[in-house]
Image (cartoon, rainbow, N blue to C red):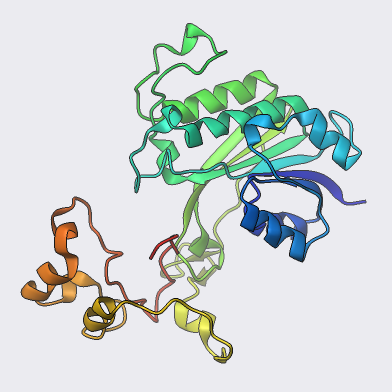
Length: 292
């Protein structure tokens, strides 16, 4: 019999695919995005609860699966990360989207799985707890507004539910994926034994692991172009990208082209390496963002 799992914040089932391949049977998915739900229905037979996570109850999910409290082996999911992302305003738990992470905590308590897996952006490592969330004690007052206090809060609350916690920042390129993608993974297991963290299988130079990173070239070599569907680039993008080679970005344009290409973004803080960036053939691709 497969291990029993429940998927929260399922999206288009990307994380679910990996969990299923690891030997878990997913009893139910939860998401409120209609397009994600349509994708799940068109590609799987997994029941889906299409509604706001704030309105979802643990007993409701258990009933759909035919499980009882404590029967589930794994609850997993990646709550919306914009509130913690370094690319956003970092409103932390003041942001409604940040607050939904509290619902992950709540549903773990209501379902009481043997283990859970929480995925989020690296920004949560330094995210500040802006205030003490409703229903939680004043013992947190000493950590409010301190970097890392969101992670401290989550770890403490899960431990109070009886889970041993292990977490780390993982880069997918270090595990054989041809893309640099950093994500925090937090594992929790009922009892005193925590889940050991997997060692990297790949590294940039191959010296600190058994293999070198998989490059973009290796990933796409041999693929055939047919029935391509894409959004046409704007003329401005085409103009400046045509002046750049593989691996370059806006900083490799002439000084005059830089100011014209970037416009108001020219004076924004940060590295801005994603602007007018072309992929390097001989490195993993950068993280794919919603609006490249």
